[in-house]
Length: 308
Image (cartoon, rainbow, N blue to C red):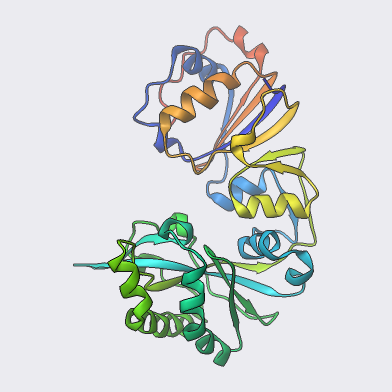
């Protein structure tokens, strides 16, 4: 087992339906716990130091997809293919990017009809990866506040409408894109093949590539392209989560995308108790620091409910 292990975890609510093993509940009760700032950017900022501050996901994933030379010096925004479904109250975001089963044929069919729309606005749309589409914007462009797909998935899209003085322009672009996609025969072919239509683009993750990235953790395991891009920029060692090895001396494992609560508890949290030190950093701000010496805090009661 790694001597020091940091786990980036989803919100504690994801574990609410799983009974914690007695050994884990006891360790959590005796551990040092605090409530820190919730949210993805705050969580990542606790482990990655970017200058300038922020988490420009589009620029970081662009570096992974196209290299630093073509990414540096531009402002980037993700414009990922999305599937919206109308309901009685509006429209819901049901899939974005890789969730839609995209391949190169989707970009080849749809980009030519969408690119002129953005060229008129002074932007360049391309797709170096079938699941990740990008807008290159002039430096200095003011962007509204966009919601990430993880925050918006399953919700009414109007709850996540762009905010800020520039939002009106982007809402107009969204509408024009949706009209063009709705009419495109490629979407009819996707539906006939049993795949969801690409009927919108989801804008998010805007920013420029940071000047520097650093971390106190030398080995990063993640399936998040933005985290892998940050690691590459900071010359940190990084691999996908499935390649994790327990004999690594000091590692961070990004488990935010893990949906199975039992896997989180039994495959990760419980084994981590054998480490010299383990950090459990949850997306809703719960930060747990576990060390072997805490076992002498016998007067502390087990923590059966992480939300307590």
